[in-house]
Image (spheres, rainbow, N blue to C red):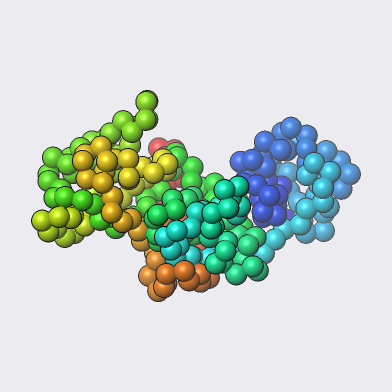
Length: 244
């Protein structure tokens, strides 16, 4: 037996929170009866309908993908640009990316059909860490690092923060490691533009506890069950901290 919202989320159509909304709205029918009780329990023998469509739990799959530059993070593009699904095997096209990387950025994308996990990793309240290696123009100084840390209004009413440290520097460029726990569009590029050091290259190397280690550019690999277990423990801790 399992909670109805978990059963719905396991079908891949939405997250648990969205499932709760569907249940409360009367859109969920179990064995011919509309259920609005959030804690309702179901088994694999029950027939669950969402908006009159019979759903089935899916096998949850978790992959990590090394996105190359030149591809956008979507399944379809009206402008005809290349997407990540042009290089991901067709049998994995059912998977969705956790967050996005812009066209010119490279690096780690977690890919899954677990809608609940996608919601947890992208929900702003949890402040999930994402780590990047970023090359910028010019020589970064301490004041620049403090500005990134203290926050920049990259859009009206939207403050962006970044924890950055210098990895390497020469007369023309600086290599930074940047950690974000926000998910604003082109956040790093906008912040670096603001301090006068435009981004040359940007690569995500870690998302939460999952790293790009062991991947070649354009490659996709399953994430090990032990790593998913560690990821869930990380999320559980963040959820606990956000409730305190």
